[in-house]
Image 1: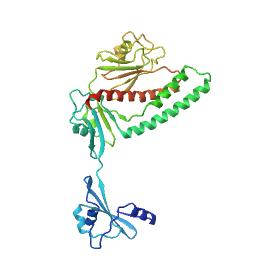
Image 2 (image 1 turned 120 degrees about the vertical axis):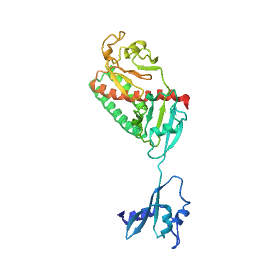
Image 3 (image 1 turned 30 degrees about the horizontal axis):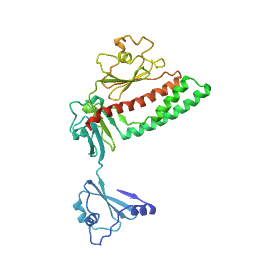
Image 4 (image 1 turned 60 degrees about the vertical axis):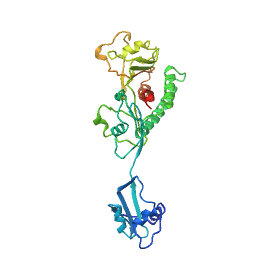
Length: 332
């Protein structure tokens, strides 16, 4: 491999190296000794010798360290030995050995669970929460952009309605909630399907939280009594709304959100029907232990409603992570 370099690049290249002086008859293995030898995380399959010839850097792959004993050093020689890229990750909750682990390059989510001794008997794999640092960065950018759109929308609504109205107050409240909601890096996963997670390679700072099995449904928003209810496998969303005292007057009946334990979010409308009556079986949404029902406040402005849907999904995601983390506390 050859690459031509300028005088400035050549000088920079010299300055960035750790430098050692060798005698004319010394080989490159002596250079490694001067550098205190090879570290434990050295990747011995990725060793290169860079040697300057006629103003160019000649990069030579070295098959093994013994080869250096046969190469007499020359002025300007550089040895590059790549480190293995280990990642610090964390696993919480219902595994035999929760805690922090060092993962090798290419190891997956399944490898992490195996390192932690596997799932406990009470593990709720469907509710597992996987937080990725890469996803966090993307979600933060999306949240910041959404917040800017809300600010623009507030200005627009204020100009059209200078005296203010209910909708403007709702927009401002939701904008404040969005601002105070930390972005999350949740990636939806299904631990029950090994094939879907074996290719999820762990990255630095990733966190996997596995809660214990839950027998509750959570309901928040525009209902008379927020909180947790006992999960009933044969009941639908209307049942839990009724158990929470019904919807408040300002509830948005056409945009009720359900966050499932695996991170999927669905939207449903209950319409103007009497919610204290059972719904037709054809309209039932599948609920699970640990599902979160959220009923937002109604908004008439269509542009605001579209933005609000994105905000609710972001806020709901954090609620789901918080609930999963709470369920796993006793296992840490």
